[in-house]
Length: 499
Image (cartoon, rainbow, N blue to C red; front, side, top):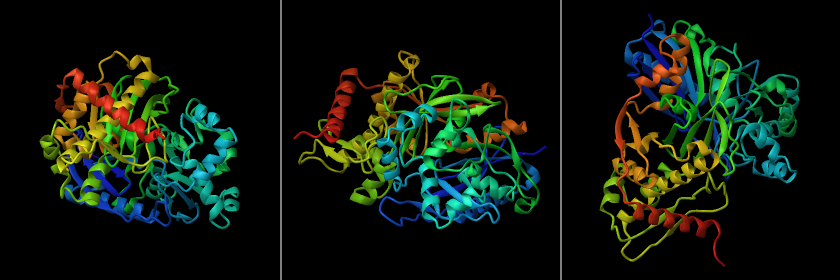
């Protein structure tokens, strides 16, 4: 019997491969970074061959580290940076342009034009998204309009589109399978999340031919087999999910009302809303959390653009720390009488504000403000933004209001005990940090292992989830309210400046 499940975690700055055992423990990890390309202001690109080559190399390296062969792997699962867009030639498998990354803003004029023409309500009603360059649809349109001959080739059926999962699946199967899963399809601005199918009206508005689009499948199921030449024998590919949805699965958030929040460069919080999509009134996104056996489970999602990036700014921009891990002790040593607020709108504000034009600001500075107070402000900014998201979720979904919220957390920032305690204090809710912190990769492994018979049904898999530490709120209610009021005042001053 095969011993492992291989998870491919293809991210924005690196590709990783992790071998999981049936008890969810990790047998081997391999990781490789790849170059970022910034050809113009606001443009972010990846070379698709870099994504493929680092993925293949890390898979082989992880197998080597574990002393494993293809026959020892029951299945492969894929999770990926969402919204990043690849268009490739069906005959050669080569991309016709660099991948346009989710962070890229070049399609803002197209999105603005569609808004001005009154189309945003249609896009939101069918996709749960807003008209923003963040999502894949406008990126496809840009490639077709700016690569010579691309639109004519697409109309002839010669080109394929995919988010990174779909591109990797194509390469892994030697060009035999052009497919994606429902969670990645839900981030394209082209997919009706209620009907579970590509939408003809939205394709027409964005000028994307239907022939380019992949088949949409469940997150867990047989997608195909890897080419035998890649690993020495074929391996079944049995799971796909976008990174934030994979983390939701890896955190075993299978029950409506459960919330997970991932803290990396940015922060992404999702609340499971069950089998009913919830239309947001607070500028959250309605999305698909996962799809199993043809049944869609929905979520409300809030995106924070700057989380760990605020700590990077302290290190690389201001030079007041040399190691991110130092921020917790600095924050602990900060003068409690100073109320310094950092609104880290370095690239605008995400949910629930969705204001791309504002920029970051510091409030409450005094002559006594130093590195400790700035470190505390940076860490607290992540906690305040999370509080904004949870408040928006409760406003959108009354079922979440009044029920005890337990936030399951993952990502690099959760290693900071100080930050997690302050998060619990400002949320007035427990924060659970899991034993297995590689929850995104674990989610991909679970979806693949579920289809391959390695892992049990969701309810039983949830029993395998273990908390490493629970952070219980300990801050007094008057102090919590005062700090949150100060944050709201800072954001208001930034978003709606006086004068």
